Image (tube, rainbow, N blue to C red; front, side, top):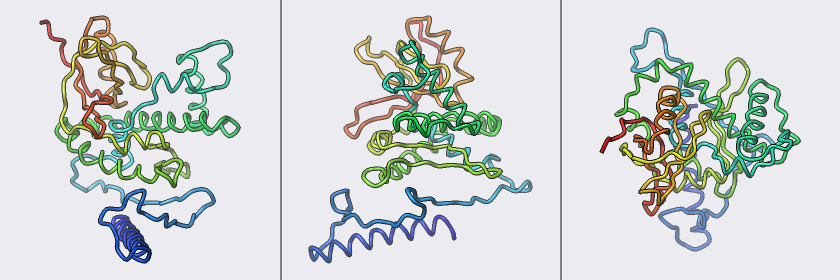
Length: 305
């Protein structure tokens, strides 16, 4: 069944069922369906505890004349890296990870979490008996790590996506991913997109409720904004950091997509030795228009004056 046609059917059928149920109760129905007006009509689970939608995307043929020879999974990884926030230092400190011994702080948690991620990606998933919060963090980092691997393998093809096309991809994808996140308002605990190759599934996208709540309300600017600031923290492995701006009066989280990180990491670390770094960023705003975090996609020469 065609996925787009099926999805349009499901969306239309859901709106019809809710509006008919509203009419049955009130003799009228609302134009916009919200959390308070959707009346809780439920799907029946296909597998105990989860709902799976399997999608087959045709492979590109060698004879096809295409803009970029890349899988749809790689494009999901590409846009996810620019829209989904990386796990940050504060979140790491709050995770009660095993094997930290007497070490404390985000560095110890990061090392322990990375070991769990390596085990999971190698098929040695040891998280089943761990606290739910730890399992959740491992799933989040596994998706980050697998995206990084996929984008590294497809780096030559991805390099054809210039800034202009990247901007168009982000402005198109951000509101749709935000719409997908609505499933985690009340019904689902997590949302995961996996790619299956050779009989093995790998996660390329993961949201929990907390992440979904931020994505659902966040608005990603469609244009790049250069911003000058002092980098106070930087995780060279996953590209998360903190930037002090406005003469030190405000500190913003930023993240660097994994396909960009290798090319700018050395320059960024070198520039951190200076007072200020000039980043090319997308602003991510709350519904009121306030900037809540940054997506860094490049570095400009620091102005001398």
